[in-house]
Image (cartoon, rainbow, N blue to C red; front, side, top):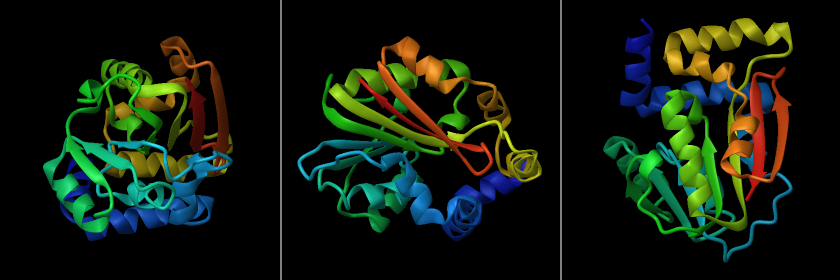
Length: 207
C-alpha cells in the first residue's frame, strides 16, 4: 500500500502538491513551511544558491524570490521537467546529491527541503560531505525535515504519513541526530529548532 501511494504521489503532481499542502498545515501553511529554514538569514541578490533534491521546485520558487542565482539539483528527469515549468527562473542540473557536478566552494547557500529522510545512512553521509565541499566559507546549509515528535499528539499523524508515503529510510532518519552528523562533517555553527510538536526540525548550519 505504501509503495503504491508513494508511486502515485510522484507520478501525479496534483496529488503530491495536495499532500504537501495538508502536511504543511501543522506549521501554518506551505509557504511558511518553505520559508522556515531561511528565517533570519541575510540572503542577498548576489548569492549563489543551490536547492538540493529540488523535486518539482516547491522550495526553489521561494529561493528565486531572494536571489536570481538559484540552481536546482535532482536525480529525477520527471521532477526536473516539472521544476522547469513551475520555476523557469532557476537553472537545473540532473545529478545525484552524493556526487554533485560542482566546483569546491561554489555556493553561498545550500538548501534542502524534506529530502534527507529518503536517503540511506551511507547516502546521507555522502550528501553532507558534498554539501560541505560545495559551500563557500561562512556559507549556510539549511534543512527542513522530519524529526521524532516530542509531543505525543503529533505521533499518530506523522507515523501514518510515513507508513503511507515513505520507506524504511524515513524511520531510520527519525533516529538520526542530524546536527551531530553535520558537526562531524565540519560545520562549526549549527542551530536547530523544532516545530509541529517536534515532528519537524529546521537546521541552519554554517561552514
